[in-house]
Amino acid sequence: MFGGNFEESHSTDVILHNIDAVIFEIILEYTYSGCTPTIKDGNIYGLLQTSEILQINKIRDECIKFIRQNMSSINVFQIFNLACVMNIVSLQIKLSQYILWHLVKLVQDDTFLEVPHDDLNFILKQYRDSDAPFMNENFLLDGLIRWTLCHYLERKPYFEDLIKMVDFGKITAEYIQFVVATYKFQFRSV
Image (cartoon, rainbow, N blue to C red):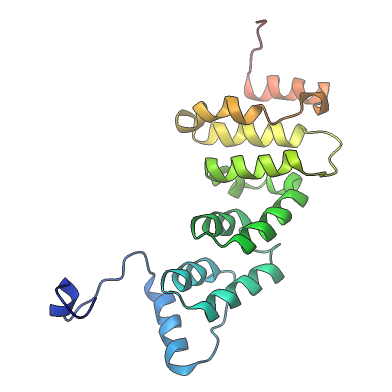
């Protein structure tokens, strides 16, 4: 990058795309001091992403350790997405297990509405293959409806496939009445 025919070899400025200045400062401090940076909820995503991009395994490993110890307080969907994008398989597995066992609570949170389709599809397939102890799937159907309606035009094409992962035998009659009243759905015979 700094030698040869690269543009950066002739410039005094280097632009690091997709790297936050505050996060980069933390990483520079680590590089010069050797002291492990303070990892917290507010910087975990940036530190994990940047340490993965810059291949600083010590910080990446500390971030993964922090995530495993603090899963209830972080945005697991955002970190799960990053683990998928960066192909950090051990973290994907740990986060997907956490998500499955806390799915009822997590689908009620607004962060669920921002989960990318591919991640949601992966999580639902994991859920289908698991022995998660849910008496009914009202929460799942509600989450899928809310997720779809959040960005309706973009997500409408995915809804038909996602809805197939709901076990309608585990949907209560009361919930169907709630759905019809709340979302103004109209059912028709096929």
